[in-house]
Image (cartoon, rainbow, N blue to C red; front, side, top):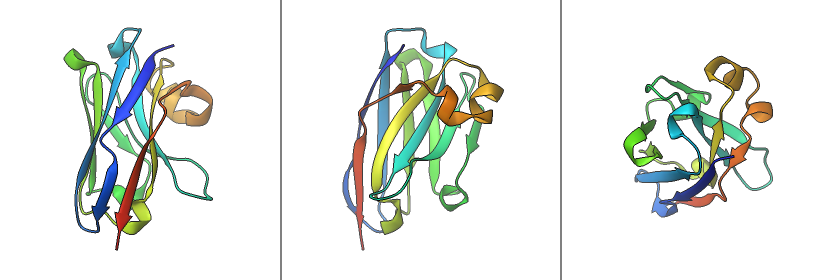
Length: 127
């Protein structure tokens, strides 16, 4: 499995921005579909966005479309989540996840196919 380490979380006021980073190590980064997943207190994990090796993206949550952008730098083994216009409801622990099952398989059953996870980074948005 690939090892994942997130960074970039913190406390920000509503309307502010944060950029999360996730550095991968241990395996060939290009082989992995990368995703960001979040979990708010008392709620289930929800997949936010995913990106393929060539930059193809998908966003699961309508609430983040137009505000969040997922990207990756394969040379740096890093995936990013740029979060703009943050809202209090974006408060959560954000996790980076990786799948080597291919794009369509990964998206068809995310919980079953994203097998590598980071430790998470806390994002808190104050009103």
